[in-house]
Image 1 (cartoon, rainbow, N blue to C red):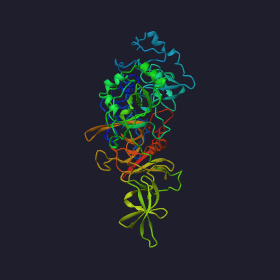
Image 2 (cartoon, helix red, strand yellow; image 1 turned 60 degrees about the vertical axis):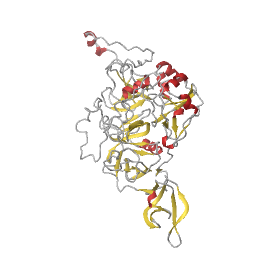
Image 3 (cartoon, rainbow, N blue to C red; image 1 turned 45 degrees about the vertical axis):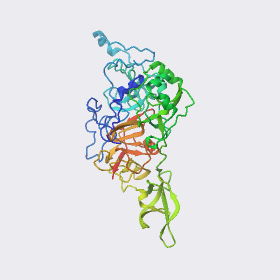
Image 4 (tube, rainbow, N blue to C red; image 1 turned 90 degrees about the vertical axis):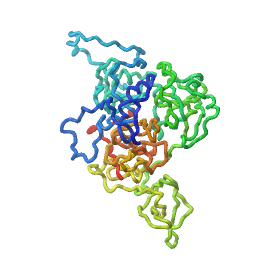
Length: 577
């Protein structure tokens, strides 16, 4: 998708977890072209002054394609689910003070300057305590940044989301209190790399923190093709706590009349509203979270009609069913339309040895099968091959009644216009090794093939930008690039034809240059034809497969990870005609 502002910086978020987003969600999603806007002038590029050691950075002659983006350069923080530089001022008056593991809620006063004798004896002070074996760091608000070094200005190399946890390395803790409400519990080295600032806005060592327990219930189920459930808002408020019936009527005008006659199904608006009760109420963890945080009633931004929303759980309370979003907001289920999602999946060429390239992909409609009669003429049969299926082909075309036909392996034929032919690359790109992973996308043909060296291992259809290979605003950026950021999900928004649009939690997102990404698309089923604003749309099943196959590998417990040369490799993506 192009010219979308994959950001959250302008969304006002209140309450403990939401304020964490307000602080963190301003940097990752500000890249131009593709799926995000340009870097805003008030945001800091965390790697602007960081480079590899002299003599180790590859020269242009040694690098035949775009080198992996350093974190913070050309989209060094991923668009969408934003990770902003932490605020260095005091917490806003409206922000609830983060509670410590001991339950204290006060902000410590500014420390007095240390006397000279204290400074002189600082070197003899005992080292900070080492965390116990098996300790973990937990995210309780928004996205917690993972830095390359124990410093807030060090490059961001990954993130965990509220509710997630990652193991600590057993021997690395370093206290650094740049501001008293940040890193109050020090810096900790995490597995497999990087450091997390603990204490303050986002992270804790307390496994029993109620914010962590509540947020964990809104995490994606990464074992599924669809890690969240998805739908289209019919126009609804986003509640930050469970509203009473009277509060619902005040926030939603004409609610009683609306509930008495729900809108009819409309495929153009997102299909049908399903108000079926969840059959269960809010969890104890969610109720405890609400009791402690005491958020206001409403998020300022509504889920406007047409906005794509996601949710992790459903619950019944005060006469209605509510959708618990990944941001810990509640959207009324009776104001969300839910339709069918794509079931298409590409071909794993290693587990299906009979499926070898070239393959014919039926992108348009079911295809009638033609065969030769005893005279050698092509004749129509009663058989049809289903749309969005893949068939081995010889790659040869022949003339027949009314036009050109593709020859399938086995002797059948289908009309030329109904199929895209997925072909093997003539050669692997320069400096790609015999076992290196790389991806080839053919924009005009609408397909993608994943390779290990010269061996194709996976093939599927994609939807590139609607402007194709032109210079239009929604063209897919071509060239050779490297996957820089991977995120389990990322928000994307923008303005098209005079209207704002927003897609919450786009699954399996991999940014390969700036804000252009490979990602799953659940909102359409038109793979094989141009459909996006510049990104490469994939069937979610294929997006999930690629996400698990490509480099950088997502470490256990992380929500986002970046490649950075030379320590962490990113997979090459070659986009051509």
